[in-house]
Length: 377
Ligand SMILES: [Cu+2]
Image (cartoon, rainbow, N blue to C red; front, side, top):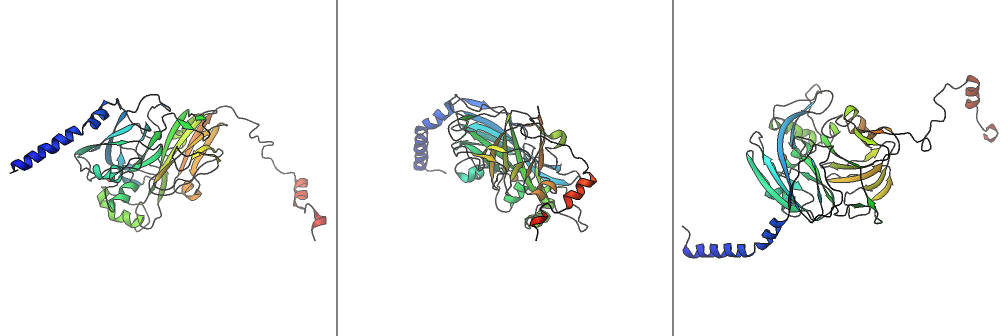
């Protein structure tokens, strides 16, 4: 039983805690706003610049362990996800806002999970305070003090960390400056559309014949997958959880003249985004908006464990492939997305002067002769 003195000390501590409480009281006075998250590549509605004072933004992330198909051949992965999508949803707030996340691990799941926000400060990005078993939930609040795009991911400890991440548990947060994006010389930059692309490297085990294996649960496939992971050679590198998740009828849409912000995250491995036939007008390669964006880029670099942002105004209509410019990963392993852009073609920027045509035989002979025979010794 607690002694009277201990009880008094406890009461004193409580009084002290209450005396220190005004800070908490002030916090609670901040306006609150519930945000309904949407599945990538789409992003929930938000202001780009805001005149409102800092707020508490409430988000809910439900962890879902489930089987997904990751390519056209029907290859299966026992995935682990935030809100059922790979990547998890992009959460948008402004610098100075508070992010209040309710993380739910339903009892239909089989493993403990948590969340490490690269944008948050302390306690392993919140990972230390959010480890929950199936059937539990936890609420974490952190202050968004640094503007930029940042990865979040599950980090339940030891070998579980890379396994959960390469099984799908990552996403991103975008902390916008309160007065919006700037070009580095103080000029405001606005986007007409924003898309969030999360890149994933998958490591699917093969059977003796070389065919991809499937499992009835994550746990059943764990040992096999770790063997593949340790070779550091992914079997798939994909955008948004699946080969073709953002191509063809799933292409991201835009119109000529629109500024499109592309947020790209990779929680585990390096990547080199490249928009074929387009550019990065303004690129925050390391993703942090307090730094001046680079301009006119052809390819940019996403360090594993980070997110970057590129702003591009589409100037021509057509289908643009957005790839990682390791072209083997883009074409053979899956890391290709499409933008479908509508509008009018600009002949000044590009024109096919004559279409492909057969070369006349006489002309061909002339072409094959050394052009400047006199100079050939
Ligand atoms: Cu997890």
